[in-house]
Image (cartoon, rainbow, N blue to C red; front, side, top):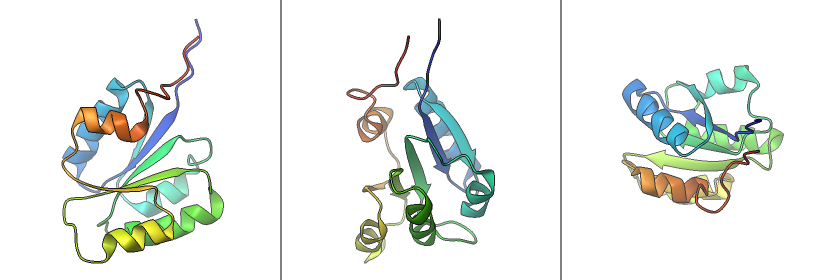
Length: 127
């Protein structure tokens, strides 16, 4: 039996949040790759073919908003979902204007994560 999993990328500098997100995403049937910074993601070259990116807005180094612009140039079809625990004025509009698909506040429940990733309607293919 062949299993084809879509990959979800997680960029989150808080390792406990990153691990929790990775577990939740895997439980929804996706493959997961995690990164602590935007620079780590860009060096990895794993963005191509990924289903979505869960992106923390407030990162060390390259900010989430700056990373959106870079990724849009190279991966125009990547679904970018910005997550933040600190919703500051203007951030939502800036992220959506830069090319993010969604802007959500943390914490996010597993059920809401499934809706955001489309796990109920566009679940990964299984053969």
